[in-house]
Length: 551
Image 1: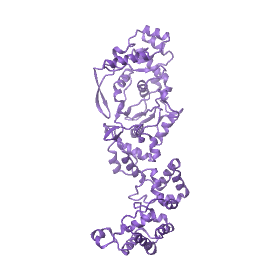
Image 2: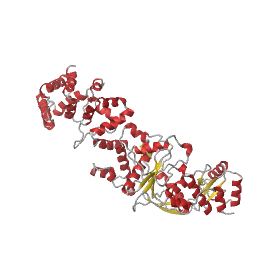
Image 3: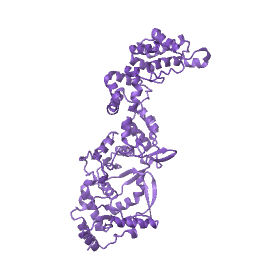
């Protein structure tokens, strides 16, 4: 009896691997084109680290005319959730990223290198597992769960590595005739890889991001085909990356320890090894210590967080790009209006230590992104968000679209545009005073800053309305009239005049304009007062000023 007889018994009806090698040829792509994959399991929400991986992958494949594919690794079917694939596709699409190949939804796919769902590739894995058995590099293992647990306990008591290797690999050298007899008798088994590695031998591997790393060789006889006939992750990923002609495996460095095993699998299967690129995971600082950002502890780990907060996808992508390549921030400053796609991303410039996820920094990036939006873009995006998350804001925006657009147009399109909105959930608070019913029913206090005397405030408002307000004024004339009002009330026309001679004045023109600003908005800090007044209009201004004058 030989290995072929054993292989034929275990896998009687599979095609020869030459069939798959011919079916999935080398891709016809330009030299240097990167082919990479996003390969999640459909077991829950997409992590922000997954979005970062997609942002990097998309950038690299775009700039090399390569291919980004979506492969669903669903061999652990007990953990699957309903519509898990659609959730992945939609989550990534929401960040402006679409795949060139792979799953489109639960059942459909595109591309010539599929199936792109591992549970549909069983015959392919079985063909390569059979080939390994024929080569003497895989074997059936009949170890029961009880045997494996007993072995693990012995290893722990001896304080040695746990696992199925060396002398602990009980069925590794089982005679072929004995294995065949057991299979024919119906004994349950799985298929294991037969490693030729020795832990006391070292290998050196070059990681594109981390550089040269020394490892002990792999000596574990891992499971490659489980009892249910599905492959394990390690075996499936090797077969899939080879047949899908993946050139670069870009992933978090939690997978670095698997490198010796993956290298041995590729070499044994006679596959060309892809370039491995392990980047440091996104970190969170907590109590002065750093840890990996956690699905369980950190709301910002889930992509749903960004939708609920209303942080634009473009802002998230720009921030993640900055985490990925630290020189992106300088590039963006030098190229404020160029699309992110023009930035040249370099794997060699990725951090090996891990970047801290800073929500404050993300919101600063988001402010800059939103500041470049047109008023129509702000209106449409905030309304779309409000329809899902905030009925009050939705009603405010829908009742009078033209007025809402005018509100959003304040200080937009200027050389220095307004940056008071960092996310769509900020919008309601940033514009609510522009709507009469909200303003009148507000319990916000009037904080008049320096000028607090009620009679003085009333005099300023009354004089402005009687002598100095003209809704037809351009901005310079408007400001000159504000200075006239200040001078009339005993305040310096210019701030610098007041600073040079503070005892000669009650204050300066800024203090006077603050009275008008607060009377109109209940706030001391707002966008440009002239533009606010132009949008609010004469009737509303008089009504709001009279509310204070008549108190």
